[in-house]
Image (cartoon, rainbow, N blue to C red; front, top):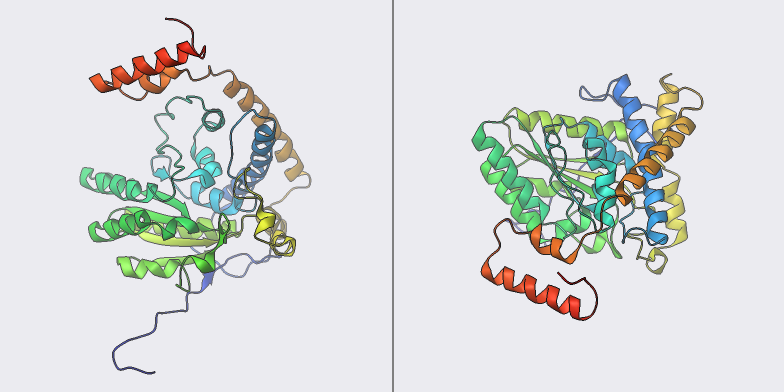
Length: 365
């Protein structure tokens, strides 16, 4: 029935792509990476692939806990991280581990976190919040930090990252609504990898795209090919420059695919087919960027193998450092959480340690 008042939602939202799957250029952008940054993008993406496999191996060996895989999403993570300044805040989740490391967070700090250890504070010159495990709660945090930067008159931008599943959470709406109202210097980046654990994106929202949700919050949106590292960098860079100029927040949806399981405790074969995975594996973001570097005359023979060897060495050293960090004690749970514990906390600490001593879990004080 055709009415006089209601209007259908805008369905058309073009996918921004600068490099095709075969590595050929299809468009240009003022904010795209230069030659040095292209090589840096490739280096970090290769590192991300090695990092992901080593972390999975560590989990299988019982040396770390459950880990969320990033294979197939290296372009999105590296592209957004390299588009940021060191002083720009990264507020993300367990799917942005590569982005955190590329932004300057020590590798051993990330490994220690998954060992259940205390990695210590991030370097003072690295603006990054702790990696968020709870789905979507980091988006209001990003909006709040951005408002703080605006009130201080700082020119730093906050990049809040989440997955497509997090856009079904109320925190996503609250964070973006707040950011739009207060016109804060923030960029909201959604890695749409097609699945929220076993729930496909089609069952999460009736919107044609996630990017178009930006209009409801009074900010511009963009839909980018998340396997095109050049395009991801260019789109994020433009959004950051816009925010830094005082023009407010933006929402970016990066279309990518989670080749591996949701986490190492997940069996994706129960909800998706091997044919689907194989189809997406053909659009490997690392292979695409390598082909582009070759067409541009930037790639040198043997570079990827050299970078893989370097990454394996770096990971081995980082693992050694992480495993040298002392294990967390029951006392640490209390002593490292509260700077000034209340009386109730002190009683809980004493009772907990007493009960653990009774069963032999901790030594006598």
